[in-house]
Length: 404
Image (cartoon, helix red, strand yellow):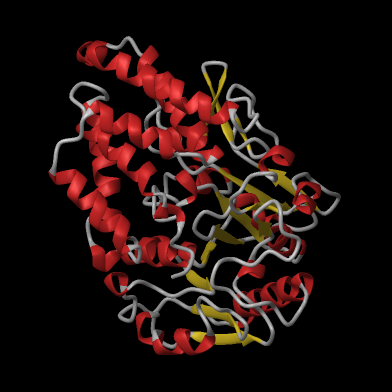
């Protein structure tokens, strides 16, 4: 799908591979986490649409990587969010004095060299790596940040309550670990000591006791706050709506326990009896993967401009499913959805919204272009507000009129 552009930055993926292979740099557990991540998503060309990255990373996993090569890789990474996350990781690795990292001393100098390069990259962009960037600062980034208007929705109102985990700040998208802000993806992947999972924000209806909840998985490299409006709109109709933050903006990562009985989300909302898993674009692929592995965790599904990967075909399942596409979607048009209908659970409901495109399933942009379109998408024939309203209407009717 067109949203699989996060890892077109081969340099970032390469640096992760170097961290895996460097002797004594990270613990065995951390290596296992990163290795599993890389192996699952970059080794198979069939499972990843960016052939260049898949081939490059597969080769790197099989060949040695020198420190000098890693330094050259670091010089090519210019994206603010990648830099800040990796800087946080470097700080944790370089300052960790646990016994199982005594062999890392020889690599600390290499880490510091990489850190210096990243800080130079940030300085060239007049960014402060020590600042916990508020939403308004992220909006000025080059990637798919939430529209400025989203900041007005990240708060409680008379009819809905904004809920999020203790020590997690959805405004800055950081966890407070030992009194310091730590990039969320480090905590999700278990690279910041204790593993913190299921970072999220949710809108809970105040006017009634709800028993139905939706969990939204964001599109690839789309800031999870870009779905605040649609989540709030569902909550205003009496449905709890949770938006999960995903490591590195890549929804295929770390969702294995999102809706398990012991998950943070279920513990936070114990009264929910029916969980619908929804995903936009790559988030839909992730929703299918999750359902394929844990079908008993999911009561219903919604795909927004998306469909399952062939390796996670759901046709044998009888989970109620709604697929929504847009006639102006340049990435996942209605005819593509119909072609891949056999990958969905049996008897899905399939709707297309006239004039809707791929980008307007969320509220995001590149921070610069007022009429921003995701690469490969077509201009919408309806307003963003009308598309959102139609998504919520279809989703609400599906959840309330369908016999589960």
